[in-house]
Length: 239
Ligand SMILES: CC(=O)[C@@H](O)[C@H](O)COP(=O)(O)O
Ligand SMILES: NCC(=O)COP(=O)(O)O
Figure 1 (cartoon, rainbow, N blue to C red):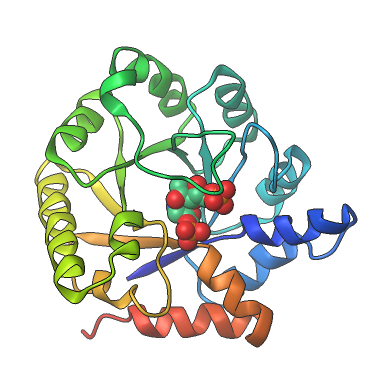
Figure 2 (cartoon, rainbow, N blue to C red):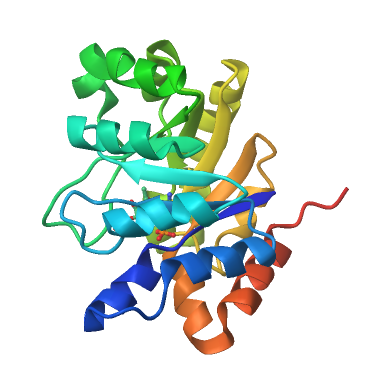
């Protein structure tokens, strides 16, 4: 199973001193060299971690796949069209949140979604939507022209008991199957870590996971190369 590594929190650490280290671009290159299939960054409207210059430098440096997570705003659309990442992932965004708290509200934005996606597709940028693992949202993502859905795993990751986790995993499994039958590629992400990520490698319709915080946190102790390789080992699908 493929792994994309989100390097936002390298920038969080860099910004703590407002100087240059650690450098998100250096992190991206180490993650790629260690086997990551892509690099994810979330350019938040408040620029709390990744900044515009980081994105420009990442675009120059990343050779696998650059996945720009962004809110559905005109400012972000313009930045995406200028930067040309391989992939844009539309995510909900709230200023006061510590991290993304749920899937994109596709019902609310549906009327303008297709119109927002089209110029991105015309510029050869694939579009993914980060949504709850629900049929209705998947169906609307397909109708609006998305290529990929990223199923929100944050609720799963916060469950406390095996029973609760199994129930949520089943929901994600069904959603992945459904998305697959519509011809969408399926990614899973948010809150995945060294304890829970392997469960997703057993859902064959999920092609990739997108993981940030857990890998960067582990890297503080082991180094980024070891942290990425350890995660890839957990995600291995036996042939
Ligand atoms: C969409 C998602 O689950 C994460 O990529 C999240 O948006 C990352 O953003 P933060 O790093 O600001 O939590
Ligand atoms: N798309 C999910 C992502 O990029 C990372 O989320 P997290 O692992 O930092 O929770």
